[in-house]
Image (cartoon, rainbow, N blue to C red; front, side):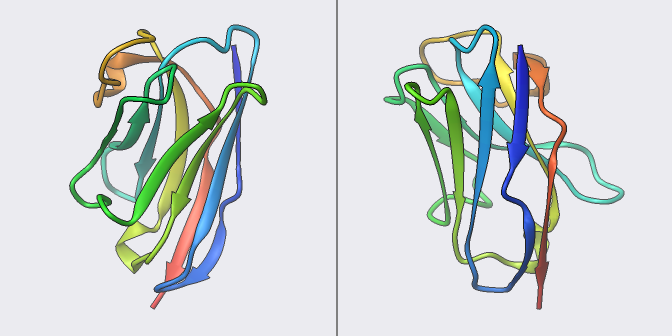
Length: 123
């Protein structure tokens, strides 16, 4: 399994970005986005199951971020809206160990990780 994250960049507060995670190899499964800011631990941002019916979000991004997937393109997206400086981090996509039900929110729920894409939000 290989995951390629892209779409990060520099944006002003209040702006938007769309991150993409292109999967190859075994693409079936839950997917999640995590982020890690300098000096902080990696934290869960959003997750989605195989069908896209079940999603989960960290409280800090609810109502601002949306996770979606296009299985025909083997790609998972994270739409980031109303960005804040505290959203600045390296964002990682990951493939989960499960495929159905509620996607996990812990790093241990995922076994394949992409290389990360940097999102910087200026005030």
